[in-house]
Image (tube, rainbow, N blue to C red; front, side, top):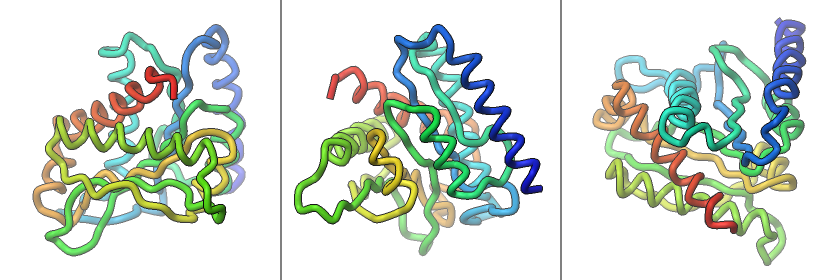
Length: 217
């Protein structure tokens, strides 16, 4: 299984080189699709699994980029199916892709009344935020704004943490981790169980990224 994962990463890198040719003018979005394979992530109401929800959102972002945004962005995922990759493997792949922004998609699980989206960025030990951290905050706020306006999802705000994926990726580009909602909340679990809910979230996230990239910040 380990060898299979390594081979998949090598093949994916080759695909990135091939399909990345001629796209120098495009902004590149790296989407880290959380969990996968043996790691289901959070399990919510009626057995809905985090790994499936975030993969569906990521794939829908690719489709919407083509159908609505005119293939304006160069989007790559850290996994395209129900495969398991270690955190280090996903980070190394993301680094090699040299994106303009990095987002990691996840779902929350807590008590049934908890709801809404929250976004994390790297908590630097420095008292002053570096450029990528400041830019990550702006990016996160754009996504929260789109989600609040268009999905009416509760805005739980920007938060800071020392997650490995943020700590390592923040050195290369603006990097955020998005908790799109709570799978044990009946309303949000139902939302993410419907194709329309997946599409709405994917559009909000992609629109927020687009707003940020076009702002030139």
